[in-house]
Structure formats: structure tokens, C-alpha cells
Image 1 (tube, helix red, strand yellow):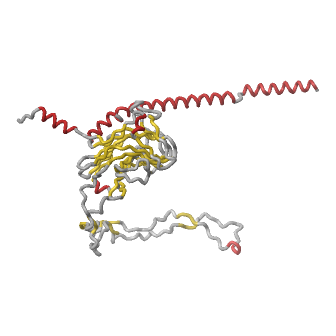
Image 2 (tube, rainbow, N blue to C red):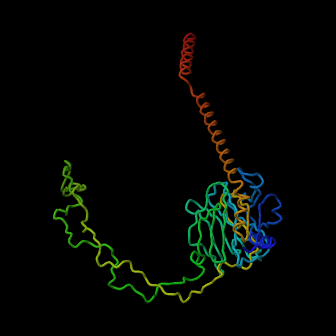
Image 3 (cartoon, one colour):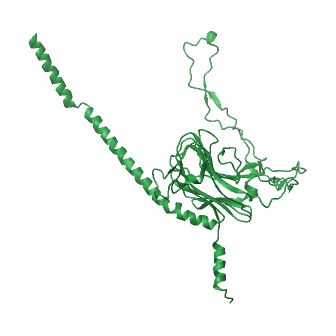
Length: 407
């Protein structure tokens, strides 16, 4: 057995765990304002504020950047040292909490080139990657994964459902140098695959042969009508027949109203359109598959994953109903580092957050129940009873007697 010096073992161990955090933001206090730049591209952009929301797991750890005004566009970004993901994984991770039960609005981040104009940030600002949840109505509840390639924004061809409840959820995008990717929600894989297959980075590698055609004698019907099957002689029955119980009205005048005919009713003996039973087609050759050839316009790109100049991350989004909280933003080159960061942040507060939400819901339920009972009691006290009616009648009688005496 070969024994390595302790110094070499330590060096090897250090190399194994080494990773680079390109950007980390926990929004723990107001100092975030020194790192983040509010866009001034439009005069009516919505305002972000620091908040942990109405329910949380830890008052400090759950502080995040919250949208605070309804029906607004938002624009804010932070700069970091320019880097390229060449030859390394790229991990983009952050948490989103739609405390307001969002009906329509974005919950995603965009990662931009290093030279991005932060003050002028708007929806037309070119970005490299857009990632995160987007919700609008009951139909659109998806996770966007958009890559910019040769000046075009490419949307993923797979559907990834996002979370739409009120709790904090963790979104992670992993981009690998072998041109594969993975999307996680709450540290669980929800989608993965190859970039070339799940986005239209390039034209297809293989295409249908334009010179190939299905043979004219090709039979692709698996079933056929049984030629020996014949329609029964008593099959033909009309779908509707005159109502045998109908009678000509006594005031019917043939000269004025025309010849009387009884109304039609459904025929109980009607069997429908006859069709011969189906049998296996002995001439069936299977479904014809169009042969493919190599696409002469296809060009392989081994660097679909690669971006040379990451330098800015930002929130450029629209929200109808505000209240979304963004937190624990991380850009790193290590999946294990992202997993550890998730455990230190979202992982430590998610259960306590749910517990607090459940307690608030229970308190609200009890309050509403007490208010309901109080209202019922008030309504009951205002309702006249039978005794009250009798007393009122007695008073009326007394008043009548007094009036009689006066007369």
C-alpha cells in the first residue's frame, strides 16, 4: 500500500471541496441597499422593501426582498465580479415566497452580462439566463428556464410546474459543462436532460428524408371490416316513428292547418347504423416510419452551456398583486455547496414557517367563529319573542280601555 504524506492528503481534500461563490445575498438587513441598484428606467416602477412577511421561521433569516405595490413592474439588480462558467458547473439558486396568494406575476431572476446598465434595467435589457416561477391565472403555473443563444431567447420545450402556495420554496438551476442541466424545487429534482434536446439551440441533427415517400401499397390499418360479416335482415329500423298515441286535435282544420301528421318519437327498436365487426388486417405492415437523414445544416456546438461574461443578477418582473419575497440568492460552481447553503437557510426555517402559518390560520379560524357566535347572539336578542308579542297585545288592550273610558 502506498501512503501519501499528510500534506498531500490535506491538499487533495481541499481541492475536492473547493468551490467559488460568485454571488451570495441573504437580505439580512438594510445593508443590501449598498449592493443592489434600483432601476430608474421607468418613473412608476414598484418599490421593494425588506420583510419576513406575516409568517416566518426565523425573524432575521427569513428577511427578504418583498414587492410592495400592486400592478407594477419591478426592476432591481446587483453586480458581482465578472466570470465565465467555462469548464465548470453553474448553479443559480434562490427562494421565493408568494405570501399574497399570487394571481398573476413573476417570481424569477435574470442573470445578465457584466456590462449591463443597472440604472436603465428594463424588460428589453439583454440577459443570459432567466430562471424561476411565473404564475398567471389557473393555467399558467410554470418554471421558466430561458437561455440566450446567438441573440435569441430560447424557452425550454418541457413543462415544469411551479409551486403556487403561500410558503417559501427553493428553486435551483444546474448547468453542466457536458451540456446537460437539472432543475430542482425544494432540493428535489423535477426535470433534467440535454440542452440540445430540450431547447432549440440548433437545427435538428436528423431530419426526415425529403426523397422518401410511403409506398402506395403500404397498409397501415391494423383492423379491417370482416368481409364475411353481413347485416341482419331485421336490422333496418327507422330512428323515429309516428307517435301511435297521438290524436288529431278536434279543432284541427285540414284546409287551414294542412294535413295533420302525428308527431315523431324515438323508435325503441332502432339499432343505429350497422357496421361490420372488425378483425385483424392480414395485410397490415405496421405504422410507416419516415426514414431520416443527417441534416446538412446542422452544426454541432460543444459549448451550448458556455457564457463568457456573467456579471449582474436582477429582478425584472411584473406583479398584479404584490407581496412576493425573494431570499437567499446564490450563484456558485458547486452543486454540493448549493445543497449545503440550502440546508443552512431555507432548510432550517421551512418547518417553523409552516408551524407559524398553521397557528395564525387556527387563530383566525377561532376569531371568525367567535364573531359568528356573537353576531348570532345579537341577532337573536333583537328578534321579538312570543312573550314580547303577548305583552304588546296586552298593552294595546289597556290603551283601548283607556280610550273607551275617556269616551
